[in-house]
Image 1: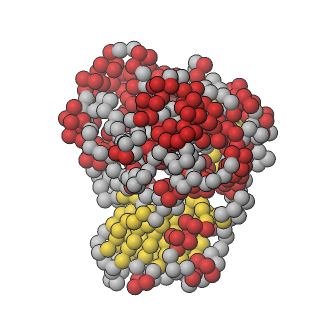
Image 2 (image 1 turned 120 degrees about the horizontal axis):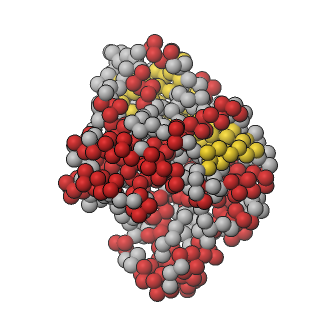
Length: 579
């Protein structure tokens, strides 16, 4: 079961802040003895480490930085003596944690690890600041009465994959990954950035063979460290490169792989999955998506403070939970985020990066050939697109709004506004391909929280862990496409641990056919839900565009069905919050 916690930091000396204790006890949370103004309840006391004085506290799992990371089980003198706990943790450790430390003059720092693996939401009142791992817990404790922030809702619909500190509920925000919340006195509470991906974009200087070894060591060491606390693991194995890499790292552990099948050739990856399972010696179970596991009107993201679900997620969760019960798995591992971490790209920005890098201009023709091989474009097309990225003003990544099915008034008022996120603020001299890589790292975050934290199983996305992330940021964008292959460094790094048919495959399946089946079976319910719901009545979505979608063949409209399903889930999420 995933760690759940609720912490209260009193802002004044009156002690007026209070939490409903009976619901916390009913949810299995236990009080942890603390000193000062901090009060803490947690579901897993084994995942709470304190220094002798109580000055520093780490919730979650912490590991040492090495090729063979070790689990930290106690906070030694270094944590007691170090004046800046966030810096110590960033430089010498990694993990899935939230750290709380007392500073000079009675102030407090709360630091969320750079991977964002452990959520940390915040609710401020006049008397206290509450920190909590999950929204359901805050509601049960009486800290939150869900109220939708409609401006934030509009922003979420326009850029659903852009994670921000703001949630879609009033008075609830989160500490972003790698950020610190400083609390001091009765009024002061402010966020500051401690960790930034831009700190790690310097070339690592490793030769090609050494780079392959470094990446394999980082991935295997990290994955196995994250696997060490669990007795039985369940891996979502699609047969694609990313989940196969995780499977290779889990070889020799108590892991059962799950391959999910949907109709049509794109949804049947059993051949690739079985090839990986046989090669790694892991058990493989094959199951099918079921339309009976999908209920229109029930959101798959109801446990989250933002509408980032899809009806198809219900079927995914149902199969995973059922198998977890059968094999007694206590964690589900996923290759989620591999495309982003391993810099999957089919653009010409890597050419521009090489042209703008010192000592690389004469070698840029190799990257032109790689881009042409990768994308099928001509040399002229590759160069003309790369030249557009050479001006300094073109270095920053522009995050476009998704205007499909959005009401024209909303599109006109907010659709062209610049996206705001600290990772999108490219420093002077930034390379355009690197900016695109860092922007891509934001996209998996909405899916890393997975199951409700009260469920008996925990989702782990190891490829998003800090050691892997930082190493991948130091690899040049043109190195990722060497030989005209996407994710080339990752392919080479695991060539000796996976079948050649896996590291060399260029195609990828997916559940697209199943998602289209959802729209086919439930088209009446989805259409009515969107046309008569809150999104429509509040002029956030375009009724005319929705009606046109259902009047035309699904297959003739690209991937618009995916957008329609996410809007359907958002409508379900909204109705549940308003009731």
